[in-house]
Image 1 (cartoon, rainbow, N blue to C red):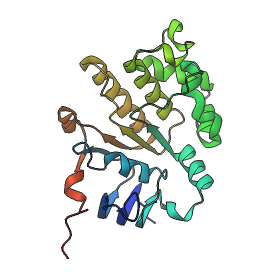
Image 2 (image 1 turned 90 degrees about the horizontal axis):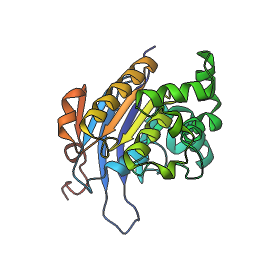
Image 3 (image 1 turned 180 degrees about the vertical axis):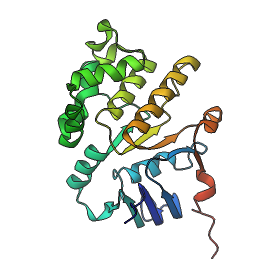
Image 4 (image 1 turned 120 degrees about the horizontal axis):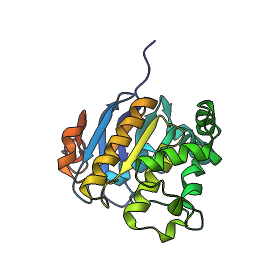
Length: 237
């Protein structure tokens, strides 16, 4: 029996309130497991809204979002939170790091909430700290002087790399990255993408990568222009 797509959208509609215009209308979209997808679109096109729907943070006004074969709208809020913790690594545009935790503690945090991700790390024979250090070293963040610092003492680019290592730990099936290279210089951007692709390939993870940086687009297998698939406001009477 063939596997269901990593992500499947059917007649998705979303508006923030019933009296406001529709933000998204995507009749159909399917993303196969293990694909690397580059999503582009101008500011205000609904990219971050779409990602929040795919992660189960928001629910559609109509239609269906299936992730790993599961219809998210049938889950309760706590069930969606648990599903997201187990199966989705998210690099937020504003990072969402915990300010009173160290670099190392922030990276291992998902494995404190998700037994599934913790078990994947432990089955490799590594400790959570070992795996966090491995990911941080790939991102040029393995310095002993850095890993025990509070994240509030880091530069924006360093915080972005910590957020990425946190998303990758425990090999979640889906990685969602919202403008993850915006604070990185050219050399670090290349190292970042090498790590991201290597880790996703090793874990057979699906990657959804949102960026304004069109120079990165040729590195991806599939490309989605959100303004081409989003029909909100373009329907006839």
